[in-house]
Length: 565
Image 1 (spheres, rainbow, N blue to C red):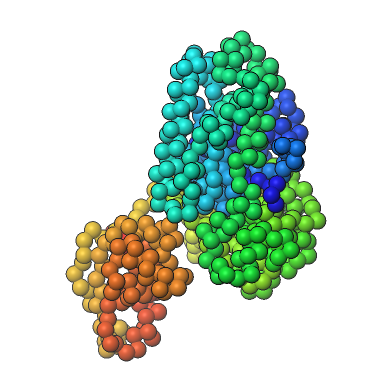
Image 2: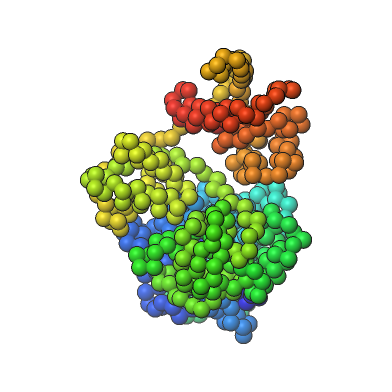
């Protein structure tokens, strides 16, 4: 495990992640040097190649020789488009390091900030690669001095983002900022396959002056040969990213609330391949031949074919049919995958993205928090009624593969509502239903999803039970934003032990008495039971909750979900 690195490449859309991945694959001898940068090997689906953007996170495992030791690098290439941010969040759960790519001309962009936040929230260490440096030379005609000033400004922006986010996180070391001197920043051009960092400059004797001369003289091939990008980046990965043995003791307490004194906690901290199996599923994909493939991180134990494992939240066990590693679009089957790796297995039919799979029953990992909610909704219906059962099955599969999609199936009208992160998100899903499943569907116009919220405290409203013997009095008022944020971030939920929940609510600003009377949390709404000394209330409470949830899902103003009340 000391020689394994699990990393994700993350960035704003079109800053060059997939082109950079190509270079790394070529450097590891997995694709041809000549086509690297244009082949986009990690964009394995047809629609990704057509649109020229990454839609699904893709995994690949490669080896790299660093300081005479062979290292195994498990890499996930993530999408940069904001609509597919859910893939980035899930990828961060599986890795220990994030290589953040920034375009030298555009600098840090909104999605750069988002992917950094996703990484730090999962306790994943960032390093920086500034791409498209060739554009500063060829397009902007900058000299060494101007160029260095611009690059330093990009690094300063990224560090300011990291500092701002790490302030509120106790277990993130403050020295996670990136710096040229430490070697946690690389520069280069993924398209022309050259790169430099401080350690590589010291090794090869190249400086920015030489790079500008070669770039202006159009000697890009020589530049690539003298300082190949893949060596610079893979050396940086091996040297500066934590291996699983370093990372898991820090990451496990962050994502798992089980007993820290237990044997299981020890085997996860030690990345013990002989311990009980603990596997966290971060991604589900469909293979037309193998069926459903669950990809995720092995925190302890060794995955082998034929094992019978528990899946959190479901009864009985699932039997693993095959174990493998992803190589872009291909899946290589292997006999076993030990702790500390990213593996893909078939046979876990009950698993969804976020499931904990283990050889003994255990406290599951924290669910993966997707910070954005669906904002656009489209109706989808089958053109032919005969396709309806197949469409329902496909939509359920879509919801399983992508937890950021919400599906509402209306079996009475045959119209199904599908909500996602943006128009492109929904367009891609409906296109895949048409092309991959061969189901002709009609889609409605996309509509924006709204939320409703009370603006001030209401008067007391009386409700009576059908026999008129019981009267209920309810009021509704807006909730403090801090409490709403705490619920959205998963810091407060009904699944937590009561004492812990009370403390979390008090930390978010709720007063002590109120926090003791929390009866239910639905979405970002809380029901407070302020009654005193009433008998048999628990017998009707379930019905009160049912009515309340119905009212909150279908708000009074525009039948949109209510939040923050």
